[in-house]
Length: 397
Ligand code: PMP
Ligand code: GLU
View 1 (cartoon, helix red, strand yellow):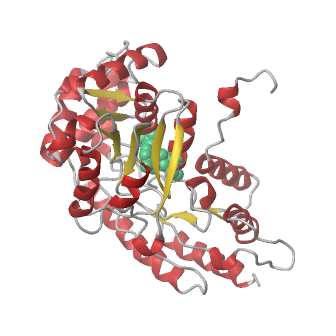
View 2 (cartoon, rainbow, N blue to C red):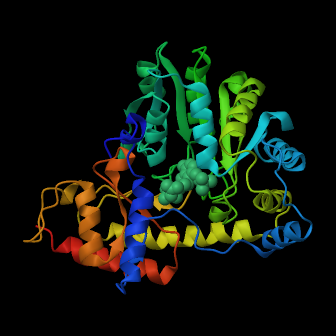
């Protein structure tokens, strides 16, 4: 331990992955855990994508691929950006990486100098915070409230952005809140960004296909800030391909080249077979994306209805992704006679122990009054899980 670098010592364990691991271990011991901790679709990868991967093996896609991704994949992504998102990224402005997470760290490492500030909007996805620390950056957190749909106001942004601010990380639909910004709300944010030369925005759009109300708007589609925006996306969520590990960015050319250089020293081009599968995913549509979205919508309604019936729980109905982030502050400071609940992490552990349901405490998301529930599992398990949660919470006084 003492020999570890300061860099790694300053890093926290990913709480989403830690909770998922904990529930796997308990399940392996025969304990009947329902895991609502990990954000991943419970569906299998659609068949047409799996077929493309099998074919890629037979076609001997077994050599090192180009560092930023196969040309035809980058062309397909460029076309997707244009047709689905109304943004222009030439294939050279696209870099394919090992998942959206890898795309994010590539961009952060390429842009942020030690000591520079990166603005996060809480509740934020866990890994943003630690990736900033890894780059030596300084996270500056803006709090949002449940009453304002967990959305940032442009004036809040104005207050914190200074010459030291290098980057803002923006995510709609949001993990962990499920909130989706409207075009008008995004335009107000874009108007703040345009005023600050040298400020960049990562727009993490990985949940763009899982949206229940309104439309998905890409930050880079406001063309007056397009050279300040890096669009991050990937196939994990929309195509049920979390294990394939393919993410990508569209970025200003100079930045795409820097990310290419970085990746060339870290990973080289990412898994050839997974890239061929991602190409099939992006190029065609067999309707499974829509079916999965419809299932998530149905589950959202089930979960939110049941959660709202729990006394003390405050729920904002999410409009996208597959998470809900209820406010559980009513239960903080309470006890079941055995365990005292001081923090949202305590509550998550209490639910794991007493209800055998895994959720993630809000602390790691910068939301200490909340817990995150991922509802990407079957209707039956969701109903049973919320029943158990309710039972355990009713014991707290
Ligand atoms: N961004 C957000 C907001 C996410 O929830 C995830 C899921 N882990 C990612 C990026 C990264 O996804 P992946 O690395 O699986 O492509
Ligand atoms: N995005 C998912 C989550 O938030 C997957 C886990 C992770 O990569 O952190 O649960």
